[in-house]
Amino acid sequence: MGDIAKGALGGGWALLVGWILPTALNLAVFLFAVAPSVHRPAILAGHHPATGGRTALLLLVAAVLLGLVLNALQTPLYRFLEGYALWPAVAYERGCRVQRARRGRIADRLAATAGAAPIRRALLAEKLSRYPVDDDQIAPTRLGNAIRRFEEYGHDRYRLDTQVLWNELTSAAPEWTRKQNESARTNVDFFVALLYGHAVVAATAFTALSSGRGDRPVLAVTGVVLVVLIPVWYHAAVAATDEWAAAVRALVNLGRKPLAEALGLDLPGDLEEERTMWQLVTRMSRRRYAPAAVTAFAPYRARPNRPEDSGPDAARNRS
Image (tube, rainbow, N blue to C red; front, side, top):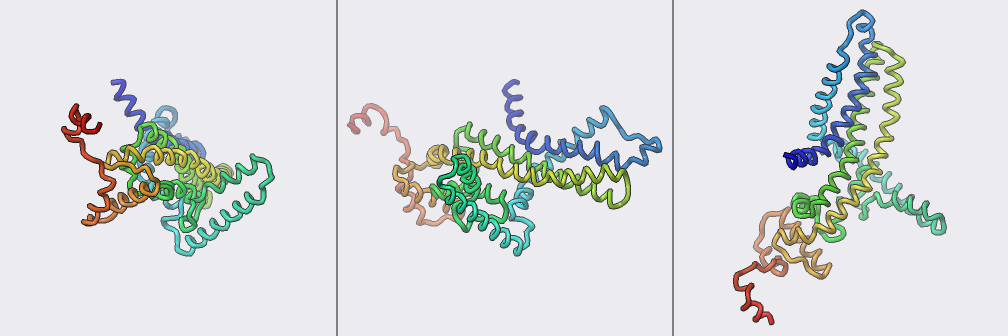
């Protein structure tokens, strides 16, 4: 029973911290700052809203349900912040130009501070590292580039496309690397969920303010504070991707060999040959089967274990 509970808690930790907890925080702000201000006339008239244990139960249930919904919608939520979804073509191209220019300025500043303090150079190098290596991989937002840099890591180093082989890689990689990756992503999820929740609560406060209902000073202050905090959480999400990038890097570096073995392949000793092998694996996963794959994979296929390959006779033959 203890192992079952531990497994359930471990599997739900990312959901709890990444999506349910920030949803609960946003709902608390709404229930204790926006809702009472909107319903202030009813309160003054003697119609008191539910309080105490009933409110806490309502907050808990709503946080869990909305957290589950946000978790299910995490892909489109991320893609909007990364600049891939719901962005007009003009805005997308302009964002890419702005990010390329920003990366160039950071690189120039880093080159100009050759004799500067090591801490200053380290901070500039950290900002520069949040961009992908290839110029054609630049995304229109800072968060998009911070995520894209480790999405292309496996392909850039080993021609192992982690976007295509992600499920296979996480299934074969050591367990601790998978947990490390999940924990690192949870930090980013937290700030993303907090950001979206702030936007919704702020929009609700400003809508109530424009309608002339409720306590106007409280609604105005709540809305302004939440709007000011949105870019803070966005920058925090970008910074939190550093740990996520390190976790993905470890997953790729340490999971390549187990993945090759799970696929029935021998990892080549030469790096260029390994890059060729992973390129073939990626191509096999993305495209339909072609007879040419038989010849292409032949040098990398692991020899199956046969009874005659073991035992004293096999040892004498090898000697």
